[in-house]
Image 1 (cartoon, rainbow, N blue to C red):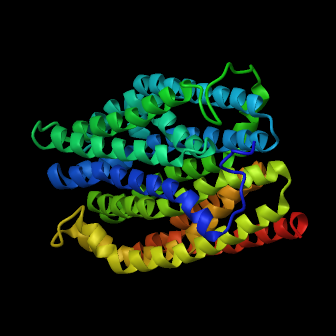
Image 2 (cartoon, rainbow, N blue to C red):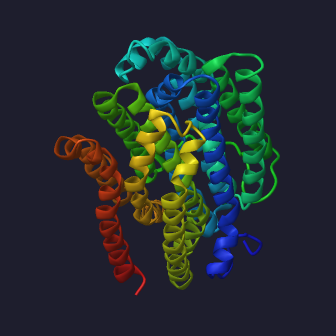
Image 3 (cartoon, one colour):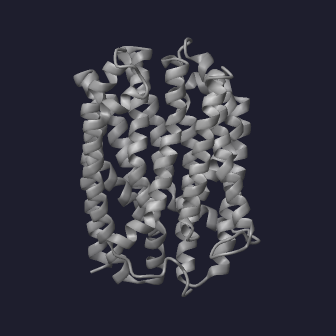
Length: 442
């Protein structure tokens, strides 16, 4: 298709401009995800902040399912668009979105049936349990919208409309901020109000995205789907690394919470919550860039255009390296400012988090390269390799570090787990990218 926005020559500048809306969208999503925790920490208490992190694995699993289907399906759709099979690409796109909506409904029903058991399994103390139940019990109702929002954020890029995704993300974030304030401060709804604000934030891009793709315009829109289980299986397989990453986030969040509860109690959980949310915010730049260029990688691969693919990977790697240095510098110098958003400077929670952030910041030197490599292999339909890399990075190195290092070095071991895992993994990721380049692009 001559007018396809993915069909052009790419250099560093044009690549960055194309990915910029996705980066801004992900950054803003990160910001408004933090709004819940900031409002809760400031206007409820730090026990409520700890409770949000206790139930965070449920959100990780939900986002993981949406991301798996979207990124894995995106690899199929963009490849078929590149091969000129637009009608088939639209049918597959519709099937993937319908599957995501059904998965959200299943999570909603299962969560409502087993809310108390889930909270207990996640390690909530008796002091935190009521907060967890108020937050999770409300948020469960919005899980289908959460999955659809996650999927549309990826698929707007494939449709050549990253700016629309950014606009919807801005609208959702603004609504979340306004509603969080309204529900928590004037109406005094506490942590339940934070969950409601987040849920309505999910609904805006989910509903607007569905309406956009129903219109039947542009490169990509809803069509009558084919009943093709192979498409769903391939989508899940291609996106398995992203699902593994979210599952690992759930597991490592649980392990971080347990380690800090054992070492420092509820204040320790509140401190690690601050660091985890700060990490998520800063990693959104890497995630947004990788998500933004993934359709380009899939398109060039589907067309067999090795020259363009070499240009995209070279420019993308250089941009990621520069971003990694910038994000590390900001985190190292600006860590205390980020922490003060959550906790007063005179509190014990602030003191714990500030000491840890100095060490934790070094993970940003390496995490961008690892996220970039995983996204590239997913876009190339090399789901198995992407999943292995993601599994090693998270379940292997990070989870292993959280379990082992505190036994050796106490609290310092908790802070060292992420930098060591990311540093080792970036060497593995670079080796795999280099091997692919030599075998396929030389």
